[in-house]
Length: 85
Image (tube, rainbow, N blue to C red; front, side):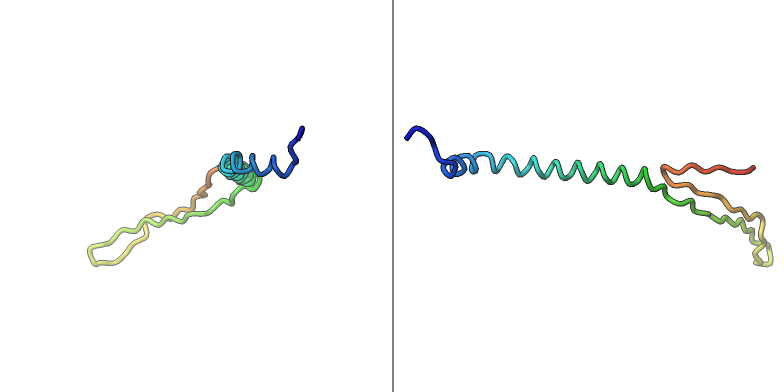
């Protein structure tokens, strides 16, 4: 026999290269997922959230008195916040 049929080649090389291909394919899939996840986070900017802050002082009569009230814009990572003031 001068040549080997394809079935014999697959029978010999599959047990050799199959275990090597599985970790390589899984690593490739993991890298592709990370790439798409990073692309999505850069493409879709997260929304700006408002954060309300109240400063309250308790008087001697155990009554609460409002000292300061403020609203701040809390930006998440990757978001640019512009303020008018």
